Every structure is written in C-alpha cells, then in structure tokens.
Length: 73
Image (cartoon, rainbow, N blue to C red; front, side):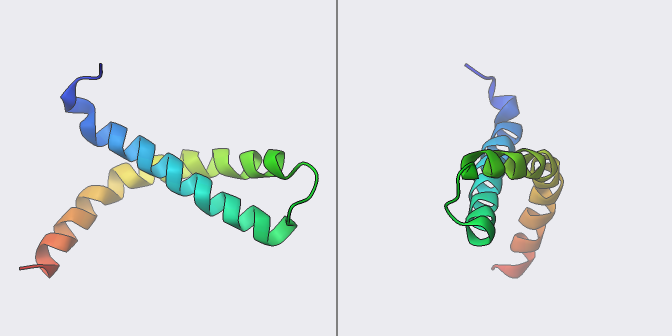
C-alpha cells in the first residue's frame, strides 16, 4: 500500500495518464484513422504527452484549486 502522503502525486499520475491517453488517441484516430499500426502510432504520441502532462498536472493542480476557491462561494 502507498502512504497517504503521496495522494496528490498518485492522483496527478493517474489523471495525467488517463487524460493524455484519451486525448492522444482521439488525435491519432482523427488524423490517421483506423490504419494498420494505429496502436503503435497512438503509443508513440501518448508517451511524450504523458511525460509533459504529469509534471504540468503537479504544477497546475494547486493553482487550479486556488482559482476555484476564488470563483465559488
């Protein structure tokens, strides 16, 4: 089991992984369609996207929480 102090990092890891996978998949399918090797193309697009999105989620999540706190009563 993972200690609870890693909750935010684990959340960012899972969220960025899922979101970057979905977005890159949609992008690849829209541009290439269901061609031979589409899964390879998807993974080649997803891995760099995930590498960028994970640190961005870590940085942007606290800022987003603050912005939401300002916008809601």
